Image 1: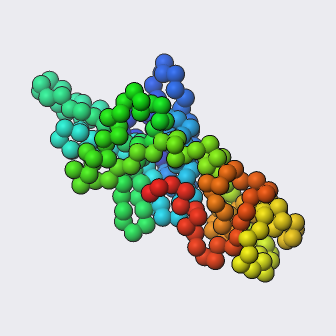
Image 2 (image 1 turned 135 degrees about the vertical axis):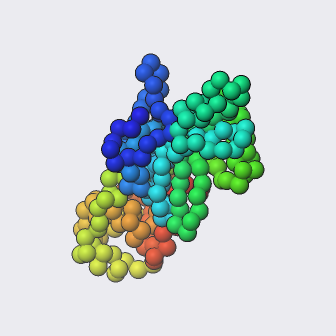
Image 3 (image 1 turned 90 degrees about the vertical axis):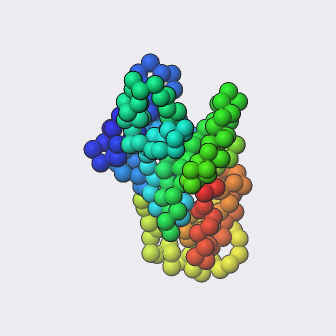
Length: 235
């Protein structure tokens, strides 16, 4: 279902009436318009792509593959209708996301809760299948997107569209190369939470996203232009 005229047409409907799973509607910076995901974990992945400096754009449910032939189709319905009545039974699969990176790399991503893989471990074979087709697919689960990492990604999401003030950035340059607690930085520079968190989200203050939930006592340091700490996904 296309829910926003600016959004690209999904290859399949992410949610159907009567299903117990919840639909999530979001508008990440690197996708067109408002998109729909099937789980909070998928939404967190999309927000993680917003932070990731190597990601140029994402698209949910980009196309449907016939895993038997390796061919792709614009929609799942197109694949099913093409072979209806022919006796051939395709094996449709629609990735959760297509990710385009700066530099031209293109990959597909399946986001799954690890408990679901216990009942459908064939998902773990998808990367091998795609490699044989000359394509790249990653399976990302909650074992990587932990509660703390998801908290940090989502906490910074509102600040991606903000910029730290010039006054704050000027004051920040005087801090030097030492590590510091975030609450110390705020007190020393008399800055706002908006300045601090937007500076983390925009590549000025580096933190370890996997060291636990971001708190006033979390440790940071000036990034020195290195934005690799924002590579919060294993892409």
